[in-house]
Length: 145
Ligand code: THU
Image (cartoon, rainbow, N blue to C red; front, side):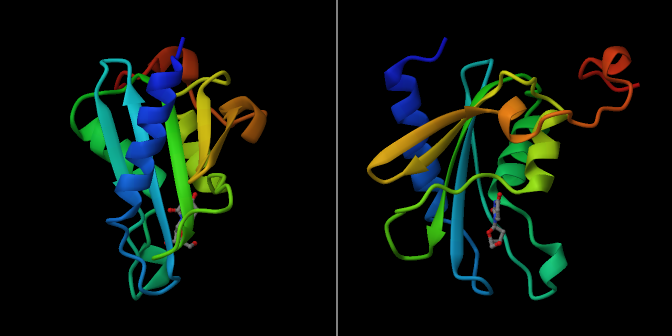
């Protein structure tokens, strides 16, 4: 159960992480804040590349930071995105690849918080990615095979 204070903290962390976005090619800055079941906050920003396909989204950057630190169980993620240098005025739902990346570790009820400067909208991973693809989900349970 997430408290209003936790949701606000998560939203602020996503907006803050967004300030570090490296996005000279699109001019679109994204920040993500992932709350671990361990209570720790893992943040990420988008990291673009001159070879466009090498770009990493903010959500997967946050996921990589968390898993690299040993955290594989998550309570929620907040995402904020919009034109770099301007306040976030639109919701930025995660792209398809990031939805699939979250589904590797998070279930259908996993809360996804879409963040604007003046508002937030809560949805679930199941709503954004119904019928997600899984390989050996029961066997692996977030453990390496
Ligand atoms: N981007 C993200 O960071 N997350 C998403 O879910 C959607 C897109 C980034 C990638 C790229 O740097 C920029 O936004 C424009 O696509």
